[in-house]
Image 1 (cartoon, rainbow over the protein chains, first blue to last red):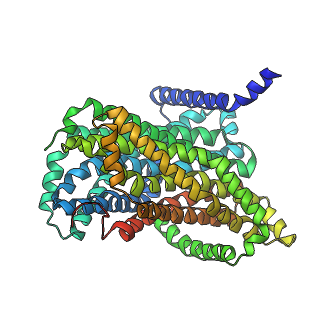
Image 2 (image 1 turned 180 degrees about the vertical axis):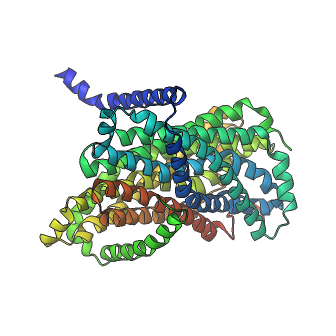
Image 3 (image 1 turned 60 degrees about the horizontal axis):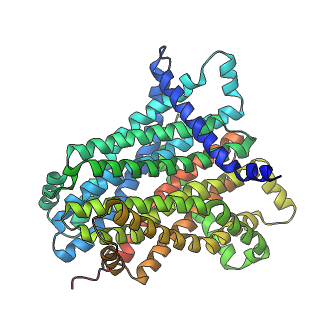
Length: 268
Length: 265
């Protein structure tokens, strides 16, 4: 009796660990089959790259520009203008646009736009039993479906991060112009504060986000079940898990990065 | 295969329809017709509280931690570590929590509504409601909006409190450049009750838009199981763009001309 109650109470916990285990297993199998020959996924990889890029470019530009103009741009410029130190906004944008918001918004946009599309696509194939048919034909779904998506998301998040930084910085320039400042001070503090470590960390962090999003969304798509409601539910769970994982991962990475790199904290 | 301009074109296309559908649903709530199904509205509020609140709070908590460490290290880099409270006050209350709330609400609640209503549409349950003489828009969409308006202000305010707690932990316990009292002094000095109210307005506008977008895409889903998945994915695109635009406009309207800081002239 008591054992049953404990088992029932522990079910969400068990399910959580089962899911995490499955995700790790899928990651390992994806990595293995990505490096082990043969490589039949070249065409699919190019298709997926274009697909993600076509879906993401518009939301990414609008999102990074709006977020950087509102949060660090106008909010910080308001305080800095009280001190008469608006040229310092450039140094602040190293923190926001490069270290924090660039990778974060890229991950949110890619998870919300491309990740959901991937889950919907794979989920529909699972429901129509196409994945089983592939396996019967001797085609490995991980090698032919998951690996190209995984590689495509890793590459594209790293590249989109660069454009997120560019549009974030142009939002900073827009904020300076709204306060009728010359841009010399902005660029001077921006370039004296920016470091290679920051930029590298931003891009590498973003590729890791791409890996997380790809694995979570492919896993949820390939395990969808239960007809029409099932695909929708899979998309819902995939995007929630991907976002929480990305946010948590970014917190851990930023803590480690900032604590271990004192040169990021010197005054310039 | 989709083209390069498909996403902006889709977005413009659906934007007008979402606005039309949204005003219709909001009209149903304001005219009081939704109160015929008040019980269903309360049930939707309960689903929000028991199903989504924990995830939302966990997400906002992580954002508070992030605000804390970024602020602590940034203030160390400008040589004023004791002013970390300024950064985290602005980051938590004015920008971070509304955005994080918008993201997770779009992901958890918005897509959840699309999946649920889309499945109903595909299995002809919405038509069945109409045959039974129940107005489906009122029963399905307006009750969800009512439920969101009942539950979400409280979820949001608790979320702000959790973000504050997380920032405190990150700045004072994790980084430890500033004492607890010194942090609290600056932190509470740089915010006021109107700021909380403005932040709540930002969050509530986002929540309303997200629920309406979710209802629209679920209600108009078509094309079998694939269609539900596609509609869910599309709603997320629209929601992400709208969350950012609302966030920016909110900042411009509430804090654009006046930073509301206790310094300067």
